[in-house]
Image 1 (cartoon, helix red, strand yellow):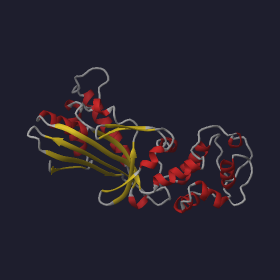
Image 2: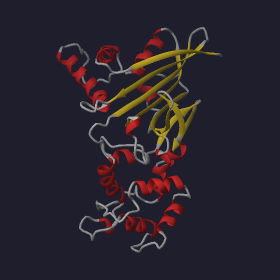
Image 3: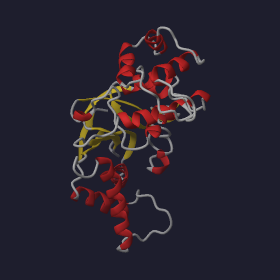
Image 4: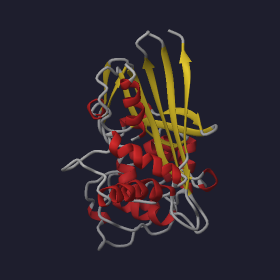
Length: 317
């Protein structure tokens, strides 16, 4: 809705949107990012982890960029400091190209939508992938009715591809993750080299998710956050250019709603009220990309205290 509001304003004044970049992530508040992944689960852990393995497609300077499925997007992660100076990184999020049509910006040569994580997340996720922990194929030894299995033995099985214990497991894990000591430390910090029993769920990723869901959940008194920045490069009819940005920074209430609940639930509730009050004249399934929807919804969100900021800077041709 924020993107469409900006784009419509530019088009109405005869301008063109040359590029659109979106960075967005739902994360623990900085003071609550106290585990090796710097992430906590407020929704499906499997959805979060699978999101690191989806293919991605985006436009960059007029060229179509395609990143194949299987974790390659993690190797494209780049560092960025925002809101202010938070140590973040980002990677492309699925299909950005379709938003050229959704946002009605055929003139745009760059369209990239990216996921934000705290710095270090992608390297650790790559390590989990290399260890086989993100695999979704059923493994006989991981079936729920199998004999109990310690986490260290589960890793040994995944590394050796057989039901034997690797003699020097720590060194084997370090070698498997490409010699990255920070990733090894994170694997240890997540409890994956311990004698604790693994919650067997049939596949490596489901077993890992059951473990992380217990270990990386929000505790009483903790809060989540949503950080988003949209950046537009705009060209006006007189050929001058400018860059516009829109920020959303929202923190959850430890004694109330999470930031994610507010930013998902409030627009839905506002839209439902608009329908009930007879203020939505369109029929069928309608995206909130038309002024009669996004203007009242965004206005009410601001009234509800959702923190939105924007700015403009001139660019030299």
